Structure formats: C-alpha cells, structure tokens
Image (cartoon, rainbow over all chains, first blue to last red; front, side, top):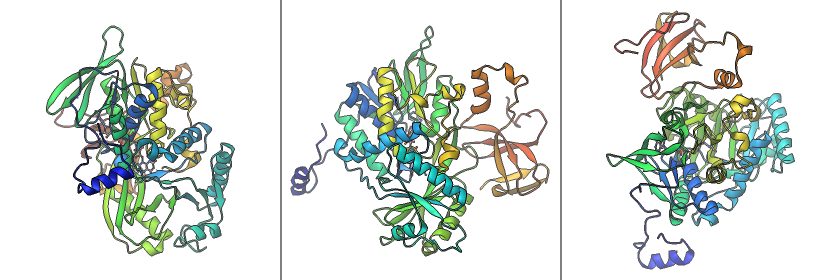
Amino acid sequence: MTQRYSFLQLIRQAFRHHEGWTPAWNSVEPKDEYDVVVVGGGGHGLATAYYLAKNHGLTNVAVLEKGWIGGGNTGRNTTIVRSNYLRDEAAHLYEFALKLWEGLSADLNFNVMFSQRGVLNLGHSLQDMRDIERRVNANRLNGIDGEVLSPADIQKIVPILDCSPGNRYPVLGASWQPRGGVARHDAVAWGFARAADRLGVDIVEHARVVEISLNLGSGAVEGVVVEHEGERKRIRSSKVACVTAGNSGVVAALAGLKLPIESRPLQALVSEPLKPCLDTVVMSSAVHGYLSQSDKGDLVIGAGTDGYNGYGQRGSFEIIEETARAICELFPVFSRVRMNRQWGGIVDICPDACPIIGRMPVPGLYFNCGWGTGGFKATPGSGFVFAHTVAEDKPHPLAAPFGVERFHSGAVIDEHGAAGVAH
Amino acid sequence: MLRIYCPYCESVRDEDEFHCVGEAHIKRPELPDRLTDQEWGEYLHYRTNPRGEHREIWHHTVGCRQHFNVVRDTETYEIKLVYRMGIDPPTVPGRDR
Ligand SMILES: Cc1cc2nc3c(=O)[nH]c(=O)nc-3n(C[C@H](O)[C@H](O)[C@H](O)COP(=O)(O)OP(=O)(O)OC[C@H]3O[C@@H](n4cnc5c(N)ncnc54)[C@H](O)[C@@H]3O)c2cc1C
C-alpha cells in the first residue's frame, strides 16, 4: 500500500532523511484475467482506470503501457488547460474537465501544480477579432468565463508583448480566460497512476499490446496478447479500452478496424531558464506560436504540426523556424534567448479536430482517441466520461456526441475552423 | 527536413517548397448519390494511416506547382518512390506487393 502524502508525512520522512518513501505505484506482473484492460498508460488511460475504480467500483483493471507511464504525449505537451471552445458539445466536455482540474490535486492526493494563470488567445486581423467575439459570447452563454480584451488591456497583463501598431503581426485584441492555465504534465500521469494503484488497479509498464483477440463466433472481444519482458502473454478480458493517441490507428488495425484519424508529429521546445517575466499563457493561432514560462524559468514554446503523416517523434525543422520567427516578432525581448531542447509527440488528428470517445463496431471494444493537439486539458474529464462509457457500455451524456458514428451520420463537431486554435 | 525529388522539375528540393496534400489514389465515387452513409463517410473522412509505407500526393507549391505521387515511410521518413500523376501505382523496387 502506498503512503498518503501529507504535511505530517513530510515532517516524519524529513527526520528519516527521506529514506522511508515507498514507490508511488507498485510494479506488478499482469494477471491472466481482468474485468477491463486499458491499453495505453498516458494521462487519459490512467484517468480512465482511476475513475473505473473510483466511480464504478471496477478494481480488477489493468493498464498496459508499451513504454513507461506518461512517456507519450502526456509527458511531451505544453500543458495548456482551458475550456473556451466554440461548439456546445466541445465546450461542455472541456469545461467539465476544467472543473475537475480545479479539485484534482486534493482528489488525487498528488500536487499536479495546476496553476490558473489565465490564457490569452491573440487576434491579429479583423476576422480573428470577429471570431474571438463570437467565441467569447458562445462561452459566456455556456457559463464559461471569458472576456474580449483590447490591446491596452493585454499590455497590462503582458507588458513584454509587442502591441505596437507597426508590428509585423499587429495585436488587435485577444480572448482571455482567467480560469485557464497550466499544470505539471508528469505529475498528472504519476498522480493518476498512484491514485489508481491505491484503488487496486494493476499498472504494467513495458507491456505492448500486439494482438486483440476476438471470439470467432460472436466477434466480441476476448482479450489481448501482450509483449512483456520478452514474452508474449494472453490476457482475458471482455472489455478492452484503447487510449493510445498517435498509435490508435495501429491498435485499431489489431481488431481489423480503421479510424478517421491521421497521425502527425507536433513539436515543442524549451529555452534556457530565465528570470520570471511571463505569468500567463499567450497563444496565437494565426502565427502558430504559443508560450508560457515554467516554474523553473524556461519558456515552454509550442509549435505547429508537420504537414504530413509521421510516427517519428521529432518533427520538421522548418516548423521550428516558423514558430521561432513568430515568437521573436511578438516578443522582441526573447530574440536572443537560446533554446535548450526540442521534441515531438505523435498526435492523432480527426477531420473535425474533436475526439472519438465510445464503443466500436466490435462488442467489448472501446476507443478514446483523436484528441490531437489539444487533449491534455481534457485528461480528467476524458477519463471520467470514458470510464462511464466502458463500465455502463453506454456513452456518458457528455461523450455521446463524440461517437465515431458521427463521421457517417454527418453530425461532425467542427472545432477546427471555428475555434481556429490547435491546443 | 525532407529532400524531395520533383518529377517535373527533375531536381531534388527542400521540403518547404512543397505541400503534402494527403493520401494518394483515392477515387471519387462514380455514382455518389448511390452511396450509403457508411460508404460516403468513409470516402470523406477515412484515410489510411499506416506506420510504414504510405502513398501520398505532394504539390510543388513554390516551384512548378505540379502535383505528383510519393511513396514514403512514415516511420523512417525515407522516400521510396516518386511518380507522376495519372499513372497506376507502381511497385516499390525490391519489394513484392
Ligand atoms: C508537443 C505537444 C504539445 C501539446 N500541447 C498541448 C497543450 O498545450 N494542451 C493540451 O491540452 N494538449 C496538448 N497536446 C496534446 C496532448 O498531449 C494529448 O492530446 C494528450 O496528452 C493525449 O493523452 P493520452 O493519454 O491519450 O496519450 P499519450 O500520453 O500519448 O498516451 C498513449 C499511450 O499509449 C501507449 N501505447 C501506444 N500503443 C500501445 C500498445 N500497442 N500497447 C500498449 N501501449 C501503447 C503509448 O506508449 C502512450 O504512452 C500537445 C501534444 C504535443 C505532442
């Protein structure tokens, strides 16, 4: 049993030179049978397992992760959390997640460092401003906080942003969501892993699912075959829930299915640490650069996706150039800051830029994917509604519009053009 | 940075001269009004997304502005074959299809 973290515990451990801490979750061998097998140990998969145990009493659950916990997009993203989406379906889902974020550290007994420092989305043209006004109005009708700011208001929040009229990308205004912000991505993965483990969930790292077994007669799911420590092992389960982000197409193919998803690298970079100079999140979808400053002091910069499909977790160089160019125009003070590291994650992009959450045509098989460039912010909400969908074999009301059927019925949720923002 | 051979300019150029249009060899349905919702959805929204060899259309946007086909590995990013539009997909040399 893992320890509960508390102030008292901290003092007690301090007297023992911090040698008494136990691992945050146990390392276990997979059993032969589970009620639910979750494929993919990113934030969404771990959150799914946590809420299956917490809300639905399902504790005979395994999370199978081919690498290490949080080594996918969960540990690679720029951690922006906001809920100011245009469409009702998306706004309700992301706002539900944002409300969970607000109590998440206490709920998980793990500090996810959720910091509501506000998110600015800049507008650089009259059309940008019309879209921003429309989106902020829609948000407010949905009970989501939002304001339209003038350049003078923006300048007060971010004095180092170049709002002068002669700027290459003139800043005409912005939307402002004060409740938005950032969180610590690793802590989210670790916090959910630990909390799920405490409820009895088995977390198995270095376990790649290589086969999804189907019953020859009924066609229903019977389990998975997993590659773990150099051996193949069959695990029985009548419910398999796949949360594998950029690899969802590969995993769906194991069950003979195709998904309306394309996988592309998305990049981020961080600079050398600087003195505190930016205490909010600034995003600009028109010039595709966005940034915040981490508690360590480095600038966390998000770039765009590659223009073509790819599974190499790196990304093209000219995308970095483009983003760096935009950041230097908007923040001339950063023009000589050096970048420390750059990396990429494989994002799963749906035609309407909204996730797929729900049952698949194969009984017992569920997918939660297609979060693309912006799923970190949804992590707790996604796990909550997906756990319900899997446990009840029926979509959670907030997840219902996000079934894969929408690509045949035509009821797509067009967030792409609408919000115009990728993350 | 990919280096791509344009079969019309007959030279190798940097990736940023090009634009990837998407999957190649998607046939427009001959009788669109006869399609079921399932088939129509598939034509509109479903693309192959292989981890490995992928056939795609590229556009030489800031060059000759011609479209052409490329066979590229999405894992290693190796470009295996480039061929002009309008011809049947050739096989990749040294491999059975
Ligand atoms: C550079 C970058 C910046 C981003 N910025 C933001 C942002 O600012 N805000 C935001 O909201 N979102 C952002 N995102 C998107 C966000 O990171 C993702 O949508 C979200 O983290 C997806 O979580 P996940 O748990 O579904 O995926 P992941 O964390 O990728 O987890 C999927 C897991 O499945 C595992 N897996 C795959 N195949 C198998 C298999 N066969 N067997 C077992 N396991 C398997 C993988 O190893 C992986 O760990 C960004 C993404 C990137 C790449």
